[in-house]
Image (cartoon, rainbow, N blue to C red):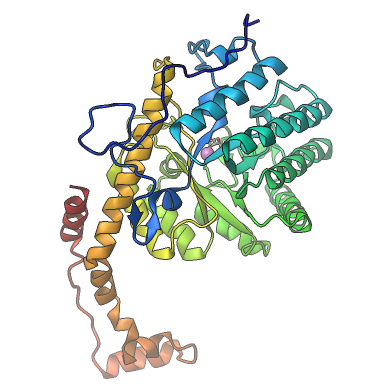
Length: 443
Ligand code: XUL
Ligand code: CO
């Protein structure tokens, strides 16, 4: 047991402010300036940044090879009620000092270890009351809440796609409680990450039954959301694998195909995570472009992987080019509305000091701000949009329209192509010129 409950967990760290690019203070923002207006909107309103509970306050640094080295004061009591009470206090002190308006949580993140479903329900309800108090004190709100349907041993074969109806019912109970709590706390969205919705081997899996069940339960969740009057979005978070060999929510395109198959495409959006995009063999920008194209863009879990390995390393994304390329896809669509950028990222295991949590989030926010500024600059200069418009201009011409006309048959197209001797000719895609424009705005 910790002897006393601290009144301040991050003593010696003052609220973080914007000091500009010239500052040499590592506990200040160099680029993230919440009130700065970019393309007609405040930076904070573009980014809607959120800090997550799980990596930043729950994780003690353990990995599969060794115990956690972090020794956070609020972790000294272990996963007890007293420890969870301190964890929430510490988290809200951190959010307030960092100055981010949103946070994200799993049900299990905010309360003590709860072996049974009934214990979780009552511990969670108590913790949500406390979050309400902390929110009133600080003005923070959840960007989203989510039920953890992957840590408890009962979920080894999935939550909503489990072969056992008892387990699925347990998962639904957790989702119901967490959706209601997220609504009550004024959350902007509700997330479903299907960590164990998938399989390790097809030899023990009835794929069609699992997908049908998942869709059926998803529509019940959507019905419940409407009954509650929750205006936020339901978000599915794509990830191809890890922990399972194959996860059903493989990537944005797969999710769209699933939603469309079951008629849910107008009810569900996606929560895109760069490290999940790269695990699926895509870029961050590709996932954003796909979600925007299908009208299912929701929110972003910002992080990145490591180019040298194939794991979900959840690092803070400092790659401003990667962020800029994604923003170029996102901003012209109007950007995020209920979504935001949640730091689903963790400090490295050797970064054991409390200041490291600040350096990580400050660096992450500055990188987002730099990407936003560069993308806005590129969009405002207009050459990329102009190049694309010109590249596709043929489709607005009479011949292009003739091809696209639903009454035009394949034979008519071919006959006309022959009669008019239309062969076509390649024109430059100008990739290097376009990349140069991006590099120029990155400075
Ligand atoms: C796991 C992951 C989760 C979800 C929420 O890879 O990203 O933290 O964001 O369950
Ligand atoms: Co995530």
